[in-house]
Image (tube, rainbow, N blue to C red; front, side, top):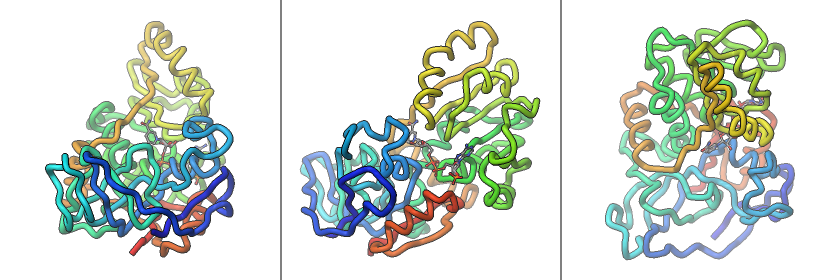
Length: 321
Ligand SMILES: NC(=O)c1ccc[n+]([C@@H]2O[C@H](COP(=O)([O-])OP(=O)(O)OC[C@H]3O[C@@H](n4cnc5c(N)ncnc54)[C@H](OP(=O)(O)O)[C@@H]3O)[C@@H](O)[C@H]2O)c1
């Protein structure tokens, strides 16, 4: 099969379109003929090998050659323990380990897949999984955003952020979106009540406090986050600098004991229960998977460059067939 591969960490230049061996499904997996795959922050991080957790598969060289986790396609073959899907079914979801999707075929277990709704295209379906599930957990399930709350989303114009802004508005919060200069109007168009350009203003230094902060790209000290939270407020950390994430693990419990403010890592297991829940909201139009650009398969390096340059507003999708 054809796949976009890389054998070293680096810029999109390290990506190449190559012929590689087609994967074979284990008993608990299906083999999927991929129609569309979307790009997430995890692909951008996996490409360059930063932050350090992006090198979990291999410290010096990538442990796997093919990036890409959010896929939509048709089941080609089902392992013998598969009960929910059969060849020909249209499915979408995440590939465990966040790799293998920039290819014509990939294998995944049924626990991270769902049936593609007829009302969504393969591209729309591929745009939902990782970002949608992170946002659902951070805003609705764990975050429990509700009317009257002040909610801030840091990294609001990216993959998970665009879902998070829409969800926080859906559940009645007053929403502040933080991202770069080029995404301010975009965040307003998603429903953000307030926007902050991170290149000009630090949201932890403007004397405002929030009930809930979802930080998708954390890099500040725990004390800065404490300052930006109301007493009893919660900040969930999804991704960002390893230093910040360690600080949260070490000092978060102490800050909670001494100030009542909750600083917590948000670990989001890949699962189809949350995927189905966020997709149901997309089907009825309460949430929209926002696709900024679509690229043909052979232009995948260009697609990653567009994302890495900070220009993507929402999702970028690669059309595999
Ligand atoms: N916790 C978990 O279980 C879990 C699971 C999966 C993924 N993740 C992590 O989730 C994170 C977010 O993913 P994503 O897909 O939403 O990322 P994304 O699509 O890359 O979005 C990140 C957004 O943040 C913006 N940004 C960059 N620097 C910023 C700053 N200093 N302040 C505010 N915004 C900034 C980016 O804009 P620019 O274009 O300007 O850079 C971009 O719009 C990743 O780190 C990923 O590894 C966590």
